[in-house]
Image (tube, rainbow, N blue to C red; front, side):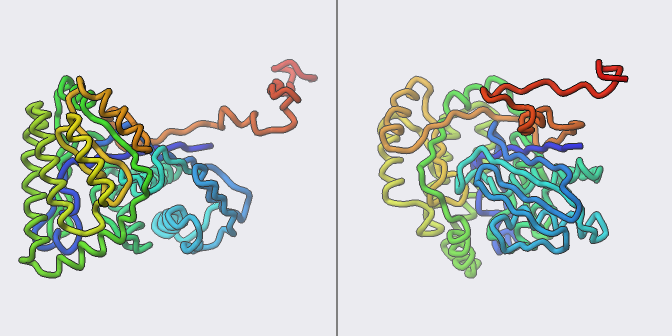
Length: 375
């Protein structure tokens, strides 16, 4: 049996950073985000006895490890090892099952689209299906947070795991007692279509270092009444007005609030933006962009821009000249999902005995009288 799973990446419109500690414990966090049709995927299947195979296909990493707990989490694939260890310890009584875990992400490394957390959710969803754990969305997101932030000590917030697990447009509340409430938003179809027509994603070519930015933001939050706290208050307030603009289909207002929120975010840490990114953003504003921001903690990754669809072509042309890569995106309402296949439909392609010199795949040899073989 082979299990496949995938989880969607997200765009954060407003409130990002308010779910970080210690701000969240003192004031509560609020984030508005939505998932898009870019995914992180995981495949889970058997391995030879006594072995565990961890594979990141998009990164070219393949580890073969002895099936003993805990797997080394300091190697090239810490998320894979951390998820495996968490599942084996929590649900398998400490038994190390021989398994092959293969992953792939459609987003570049350091994209700012929550790729690491989304990949963690996808892997957990694959184990959930493989072992019949019946984890709900909240349990899936919480387990991903525990693996990343608790077990592995990776710096980051809390919104990505919940966005990937639930999917869709959500206003997510983060409370002081570590309680999370995901509020799905019912956005009319025409509003989603207009938002997609207005949205441009631009990969800057720079991989952001979210951990460094978050460390600086956390350090500056030590003063509960300081400037960074006031910026965070305003970022949270803008998430609420963004939600209202989105529900009413006021895309221009949403873009204006996005622009205001980006100004507040840039004031929270020096590395959130760069002089080059700021100059490019102002250039795009001159071409008709109404608002935008860097996705995630900042410093690089994807720039999210909103502009009138009539001006989209010239904005995209100017972005292409800047040297990055322009993406279009569709929003998705489906969160983490998984399914089973009895065997890979592509398994024959990997069998060298079935391949001809010109690359064709020969049919399988009959094995019984019922399928034409010898009785």
